[in-house]
Image (cartoon, rainbow, N blue to C red):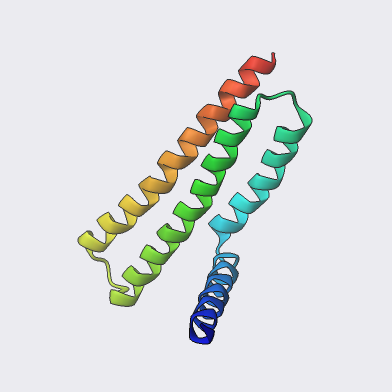
Length: 117
């Protein structure tokens, strides 16, 4: 049991270290700032609970996708820093995932803003 708790504790500390590393990345920091405005919007306007939950879920997925994108970029840079078409495609695909989640979030936000007016 003690071994299990140590493993959980190590996993938790590794996760915190990952978040610390993510907070060094410009894109992740920008998305965190965006989140502050997002939560102010969500809790100061009359938006249905369902929309609030979808927006919060989409925002969390955006942050997770950004962390995965950053991880993929760092792995690619570790493999080679030279221009490589395959590496470029891999980085572009990871970036596209972030972009798709961001488009979804913006779409849902646009619907809620439209419904307010």
